Image (cartoon, rainbow, N blue to C red; front, top):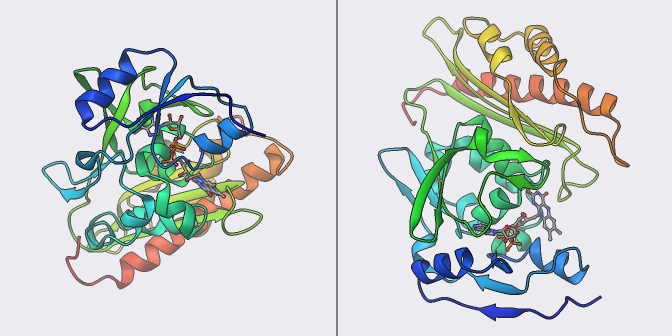
Length: 295
Ligand SMILES: Cc1cc2nc3c(=O)[nH]c(=O)nc-3n(C[C@H](O)[C@H](O)[C@H](O)COP(=O)(O)OP(=O)(O)OC[C@H]3O[C@@H](n4cnc5c(N)ncnc54)[C@H](O)[C@@H]3O)c2cc1C
């Protein structure tokens, strides 16, 4: 199939892009085009006008700042994957990105595009929710910030206003040593979207017990969720797999699981519990062997 006819504009500046997006109901941002182009070709999306933000240089960066690590919306996923600062300061992000599609899709697909697209099974939204990332966007000349936990509101649905342009995502950096991360997912093939996924970051105290923990699950509910009650139950524990499974299972009992042709809701519930336990076990193992104050 072919896309419906559309206009194409490549603005020279962020101001121009934001004004074009906010001022036209039929306009839509295109970044890497890895999702939007197939949607248009299948006629599932019909924007009247594409505003190409992929070459706006001020939107592509990875930098350390007072918040932690900030990443510009049009930074390609593959660039973040190979960034040394991300590997050292936000290792969970570095661990998750290789699970996104193929090297070729990560070369064009952007961080902001994946977040704005809000696929329930996408890895970047899961990491953003798990680590309490903060997203910044422009609407015309106005700017706003929204925590990741409030950004994703449904499958492929965010709180970004129509005509808004995502510009930045900030990831907090955990300070101290004895920090480890884990990311696990199941999919039909490595490059495919996950049926279930889990992310975990753990910090251990001097006694070897859990001092701080963040656990998130993705692909099992309408949008990724952080398991705050499970985390509270596990603080101060030795993170034994049976305790992690019980805490995660208890919290997921309160959530309805997705079901589709690929996986039933029962399967997704079981998989989420098992994957969360494995992600935490990986994080624990890494934290126990990390000796340096690398973070
Ligand atoms: C074969 C294949 C396999 C894939 N596998 C995976 C996978 O396993 N996991 C995964 O997470 N993804 C996967 N993807 C999707 C890929 O990660 C895309 O890169 C991503 O979903 C969208 O990023 P993009 O930059 O290409 O966005 P685009 O396709 O350009 O845009 C996607 C949507 O986001 C909007 N948008 C883009 N940027 C902004 C912005 N800055 N502000 C506001 N709105 C914006 C667009 O208007 C559009 O609605 C796969 C894609 C392909 C083709």
